[in-house]
Image (cartoon, rainbow, N blue to C red; front, side):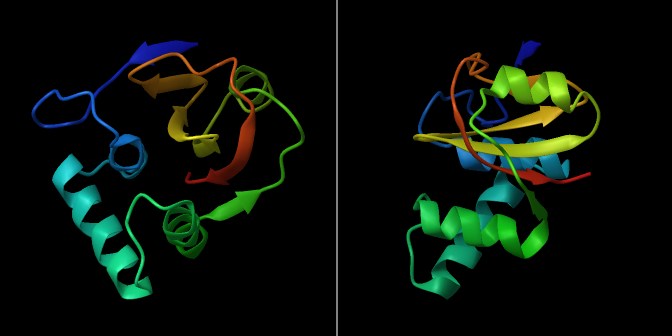
Length: 118
């Protein structure tokens, strides 16, 4: 299941998917998520939108759970409860209790990694 959500304070649809997803998953503002991710990436000497910075940020905070080759939709079917951050090629999204909150429906995209937030 998919529900449109854009946490960007200006309603912009830009390449801020990590900040948007983290803000929804952690129940913090977009600005707070931006500041946390930015500080973490800066400490690593990386850009905040690099895969390495994002994965390190998520690994420090959450349990990475094993995934097989599956789509976001298949993952939702197998994990209908809880909050997850899901990475895929060029994107990250958040799933909460079986709903994909994002600016577009990514249910047909193949998952790279998944973290259980709650």
